[in-house]
Length: 239
Image 1 (cartoon, helix red, strand yellow):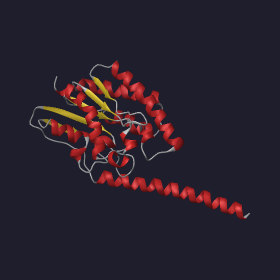
Image 2: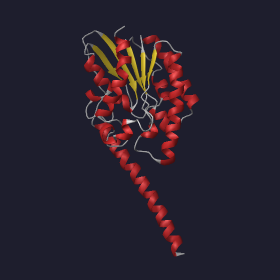
Image 3: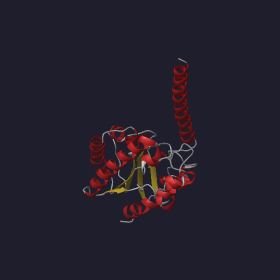
Image 4: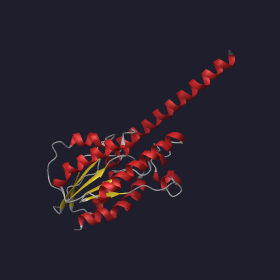
């Protein structure tokens, strides 16, 4: 009986530890959200850019909005007005609902989406159907759409073991389908942020590229993503 009680206490202790670990990470994420605001700028009339995203479009993990993707794009294109309607936790199906009454004309729409769909383990077919509907709704309102999703979600240091493997599998499935969609959809470019394990800076140097919640990019992480997205942004805005 003593060993049974001891075993139960160990299991309970592990469960409490895991709960507290997740709760502590969520607290860190809430702090990261609170310390930054989605980057926007008025520009000088040269053009207009719209950001629609999740926490990565919001800039969660950056110390200031200027270090997010939107902030870095604004610094390179100060003449463009930037509006940013990114929402923490948003999935692609929620975005589809949010843009039901979308209006206006933009030189570029940037979608920073997909990571939460992977984290919620949504069916890839459903996610892609939602994304196609989003594109159909947005393309009449812009010259170009550029999309970024998180890199290898399973590679984030917040995850390990079977959970990390499952998130990597889902990331690969999602990535393959969106790349295929981009090849068959005019005026839609997908920026591939995925790096194979062993060549992934977020895994090799997490203290540099990952924020304190072990999930979102740091200032440097956003900088790395921006360097990958810059050719697509330049191609869209210099046409």
